[in-house]
Image 1: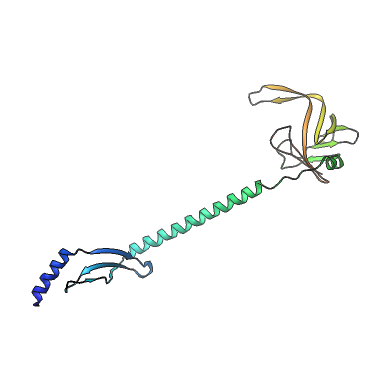
Image 2: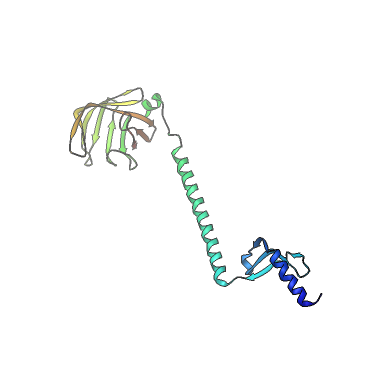
Length: 208
């Protein structure tokens, strides 16, 4: 067939059989994009040979930056997940507790409020004496009798000499009476942990 007729037939074939794109392959590191497509050939058939298109430096830089951002985001998500997991593990650790017998064995003595206590002034001292007296020790060493104490099952009951008051943020005060209740959580040779009151959040922590 003469070349001019072959060219005319090729044009007709291209009009009657448009290009069908099957996908593309983009190897970032080599700077070329391979597009596989079905194309009409001069003899009326089809060819699926890939066509390579060069990629500019700007496109490669954009792809590399995008890949780096994705990696950073994945690392950040992993780090946050591990932090939350560790925090949850710390909060789910069981709190040490003592039996009534352990409390009676260790509660007597002179105790100092710890820096990790949720209430009372760190460094303040109290004396839970064997004679039933409950004494506060001031910073200058002077001692003040607060009242008497007893252990009701696992609750330290302090009957104070003076009436206790609670002061609100607006300045109002209410009387709490003369009896204070401190549930004992743990009592050991060098550590005493109590709740600030019945059904009251937080911990009073003492050491000696």
